Image 1 (spheres, rainbow, N blue to C red):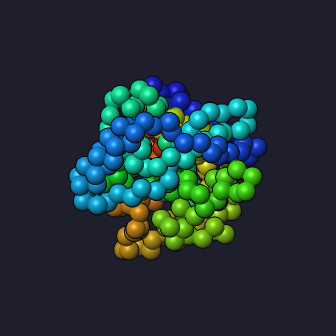
Image 2 (cartoon, one colour):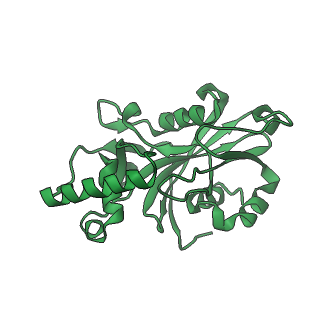
Length: 241
């Protein structure tokens, strides 16, 4: 069902992600201002911040999604300054996975120091799209990126996934972020992920949960104000709630 906080464009395996090489047209005073905002943000987060490339959405034409990279400090500066936001409407583009096991769906709780939705639950794995999977033809293997995130967040290897299925491009209209969303099917059980008495842990999340398939609706209802909108939209697109 549609929601005011997300827009959803369903995808299939014919969709491709392409990178355009071009810089933001920043003036010298704007660059200086962004540097100052960046220093303030680093101080606010006690150094938990790095100026890595950030992929931002540009447009979708047919089955082609186009994006470009900017510096993360540029994003922070634009995010923190109203005039810069008007000049540069920036929409970060990431990947988000829906890991479906034999009897569970995987959620992770975001760290408190992240820029967006600190402490909220989301479907895992999820992350940014770096240049690791950028080919010489300008195309990005975003599913490969997601499988890399899966390994980093859970320790699961790519060959543990039996099937991948592109679900949707989803816009979070509150935070102005896009995600390429993919369903990941595996043959593991919740007990395979974390034996009884052993909590499921991750370096990327403060907590993780293998939620029973028949309990996902209740989990979402109980945490509705603490689950990111994109994850809710993914579950609905996959007809799991």
